[in-house]
Length: 205
Image 1 (cartoon, rainbow, N blue to C red):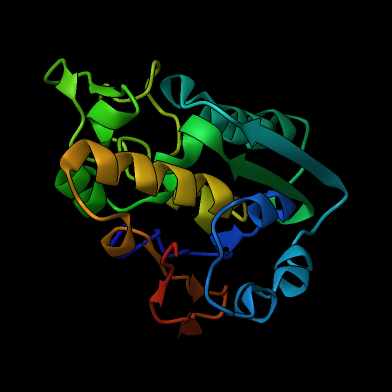
Image 2: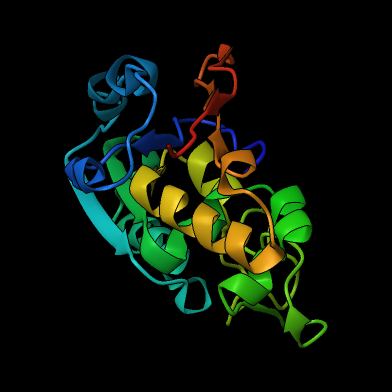
């Protein structure tokens, strides 16, 4: 999918590889470990209160809701945001929440993942839960991904799932999968320092 996964506010939104890729068609020789720098990413986990949520399905945004709920409930017991970290892993049908709205519109991801925009009752053309609008979540007042990243929550997306669904989208649109599978990592830390990995391209052989 052409550019880009969402950038971050307080943490990195990373794409990690999976050993199961060995069973997939051969990819070009790219050192993904150095590009993603997973060890440094995990070093950003902070605080005495930590949890990981498995966002394996989109489920009306519940992977993001549970991430938000962890912060809310801990705040109510006098734990500040700086003393906790929730990591939300977006995988399987949860991966579209890692993509910019431009990708949702271009590749009709709402239809692909069966996610409707409540305001139109049609397949969504935007990422509902990055900067949610009124009515996107099941309850008002829930922070979206952008705000949760600003609070210190961390999100990562499954690289293998991106590759698989890129091929699915290509087939449905009559495209060559070679032109669809792209990814990039944009980061911004708490001090405002930014970095851009550039766009990496994967082609099946």
